Image 1 (cartoon, rainbow, N blue to C red):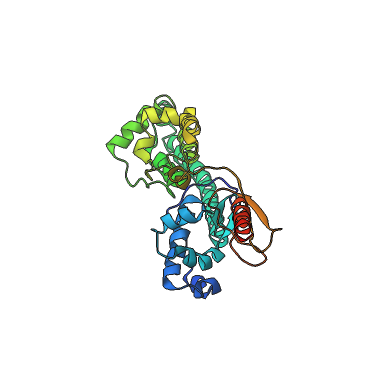
Image 2: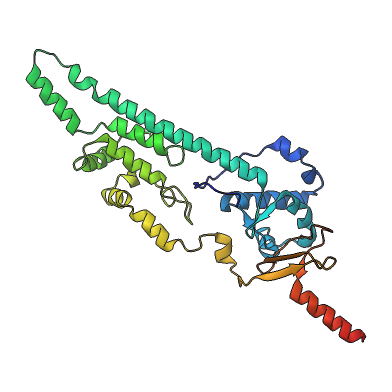
Length: 304
């Protein structure tokens, strides 16, 4: 597999226009083929590859006429692995994007801890030293009350690169934060909460509707409990099954079939039904071996 790291789905990828136009494979395509290529690239980005199945590819491209001829040059831009087609350059871009997000997330956690320390330390020391009783009371009260700004900044640092950023601290958000703070009076608890959300694909937009959680949703008491107890992860595992849209929509008989080259009997490949692949020796499309043997038998019987 080209994919190895856990990742969140991103709605966009970088398109390198100069490299695209300079690619010899693209230069050999006509405009209709280029449209097919860009369409398949888009699906490959969103679904982490496209099915290596001629019928499914044709459906994804809206059933164009003479598709079997058009797709030949386009397939030169993809590599086959485990029954799916991948674009090598796109997977490289995906890996770079994931790495940048992971570094940004780690930097955000470090920044959040530093801010919490800067918010909490000066409160007691800034009070007059000759009024120790008042100073102690005020410092204690500040520790019992949430620092709304720091908590919202923690959310933006950890999740703001993917989920909607929180721009304001309104009464509703203050109320939600206070309800959590009552049982967990520690900003570190919120950092842990937001970090757990980052590991829940459903809340990060990896779902059929493309919906994403936001700060108000995450701070709801019932959602906090589910997140901290890992309920979303377990529910996701129970319901996961086969989450690939293509396979769910176009599920075929997964019986393994042997394919061979009509010109080179020693070239054989095992795969699923409607596998679209070529002979490495003569670039002729491989056919089902059983069908080829049957046709040869019938042809021989008719000529004898």
